[in-house]
Length: 287
Image (cartoon, rainbow, N blue to C red; front, side):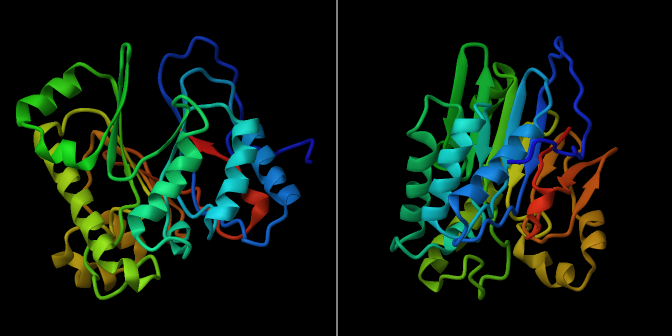
């Protein structure tokens, strides 16, 4: 194992910090042929890049690997070294696994690996809203969110203090293409994409002023409404982000395209820790 890790963000030792510190990473791309020693080395690098703050939350934004078997080996090492609250979303590479005959069954297997090991430290978000308040930690699924009245949503956000909307995201408009590279799942993927956009639009309409973290694998530029797809495809990634409407009170985390980009100011976008296929850069960044 490496004894010295160079941090992309310097560690600061702050004991009295009350704000949430969000660590994030995506697109680690551990090969299915990776040895346990290699996986342990990657997880150890992640652990050594965690700053010594209170109130740390970790977002792992998909494309850790290509198979359920590899992901399970990664997660078994992860939970040994890192006991910090972690939110996972699945990427298109995780969903390439062919051992299950439906998309939902594939997601459920990943959920069983992540969530059955512990009482809530590790969570998989799949078109779900995580809500945390005093004496409250709850995951609200898509169907519940969509059925909630305006008053119910307002009450939820007024009685809690930390919110994460998470999911793969999927591609918003190019439905002749199966983003997860498995045409058998195409109808389920379309439903998931539409569902996520519906949840997002509802929260945007009712609680646009609340602080909300959006954690997806696919960037917002690609899960926007289908009508904009052809326009978006004709622009550079930088222009795509610049022309994509974002809520100024919300913070967006994503990966997928290996185009590392962040923006702070009127908008808060963090897609700048997409590792790609270079193991040497496998460290968390944080805000």
